[in-house]
Length: 108
Image 1: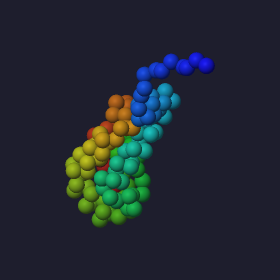
Image 2: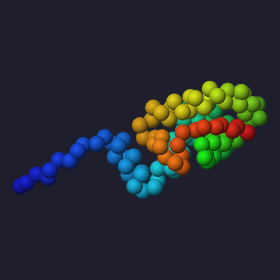
Image 3: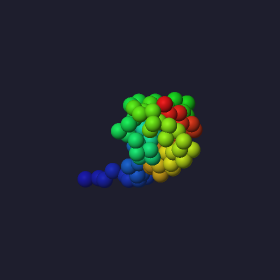
Image 4: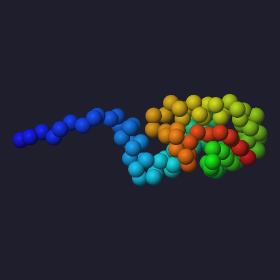
C-alpha cells in the first residue's frame, strides 16, 4: 500500500480563510465577526436592535436613546476596542475589500 505524499500543512484558521476566499463567503463571515466584536466591546447586545456594516462604517440602532447617548460619548474607545478584538481574531480577514476593519461608528 503506497502512502499519499504529504503536502504543506496549514492551520485550520488558514484553511478556513482560504475556503471563505474561494467561496466568496468571506464578507458575510467578516460582517458577523464585526457584529460579535460590537457585542463584546459595548456590552449592549441586549439593547441593540439593528446592526449594519457598509464601507467601513458600522451602523447601530439601539432600543434606548439613553443607552445610545452613553455609547455615543464612548465612540472612539469602542471603535478602538472593536478593531483590537478583530485584530486578535485569527479568522477575521483584515484585507477583505467588502468587510474589513471598522473605520467609523454611528449609533442611533
